[in-house]
Length: 314
Image 1: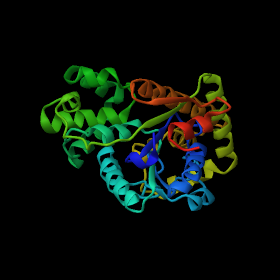
Image 2: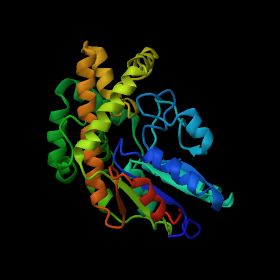
Image 3: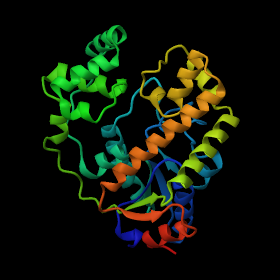
Image 4: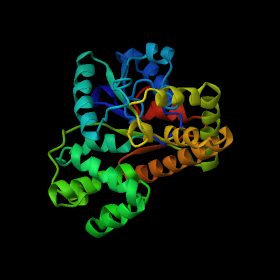
């Protein structure tokens, strides 16, 4: 494929699969064709003040290639897949006007799906309904609300863990506001998606142990860089809580709970690594449901060369 003939190139994969390095290498290879700019497809990188635990690209990396949708909102606020689709659509047009190639890089697959396929119109959040649900959850526990969701929306309940407070709360909120299950909105007619030509290159390891080792190494590097101090600073703000989408990001959720309950650093590390592995597993499952993707073995010695070939550059 020629980068000049596409609207953008998506470079995706599970966490710790080498997407950042591959994106920077691809951007360098695209320099003779006008260069590239990176649009982050990551639900954690949008938050300011969450640098270490998100493995955010360094200042040097961001100076070498322009990056977008990083450090855009405060952790107190939320950022949806619909927000991403709107912002990414605008950015693709602006980058193309600069005669550069947009690179969509990240692992939040719902964001990419929203951009490529469109999303059904969802009802906005209702603060009073959300507060009522939080109050009930504190009294009854989220497993009880999960059982309630099972009765009114078994399709959604089936794919959610009993402790997934954020998604259970949103599903029950949609039911309370509209009288319809969340799954009905997901299955309903979607607005016409743009006629994009965006090839998807997916970095997926053949050997799962390779990925597990990289996840552990990266978590250890984050801990050494002061990750727990970063979480302490977020907790000290006083306006954040562990149920916010930002604080439910993998790693931050375990660190917040561990610091609140007096876990040892070893236990925070163990639980953080386990949660990151589970995230990678979910990402790989989602990727395998995308038959149009071009798969590259992330653990192959020539992975970067394969990415360049698939992107139409040498």
